[in-house]
Length: 156
Image 1 (cartoon, rainbow, N blue to C red):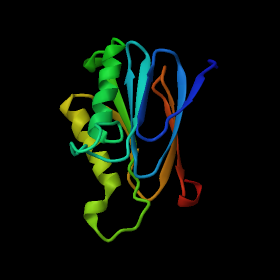
Image 2 (cartoon, rainbow, N blue to C red):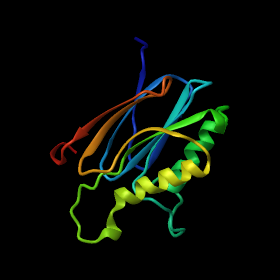
Image 3 (cartoon, rainbow, N blue to C red):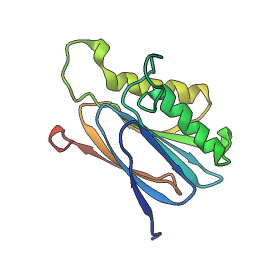
C-alpha cells in the first residue's frame, strides 16, 4: 500500500494536492464535496457549514457556494478539465431537532452541492447524505476512493 500523507480537514476549509493524501473529516449538518480527476489522478475536498454566502461577512469556504467554486478553481489550477472531474457528496445530516423546516441546514447544504455540480456538468458518482447521523469520511486523493462510516450523536 502507498505511504499516504495524512491531512485532517477542518470545517470552513478545503484541500487539494497533487501528492497522494488521505484526508479525514467529520461531518454533521456540514457537507463535504470530493472532486477527483480521473485523468490526472488528483483530488480535492471541501468541508462547508452553511449553504450560501449572503454577501455580508467574508466570502469564505464556510459557505457551500464559495467552497465549491474555490474547490473547482483549485482543481483547474492543477491542470484538471471540468470534463475529467467527478464528484462524491457526503454529510448534511440533521442532528438537531427543530420544529422549523427553514432551519434544515443539512438539506440546504446538500441542495447547493447538487445544484452547483449539475450546473457545471460535474457528475455525482456517489453520495451519502441526509438522515439523522453524522459521518466520518476518509478521502484518498489519488484514487478518488472515499470510505465513510455513520456516527451516532454521541461520537460527534
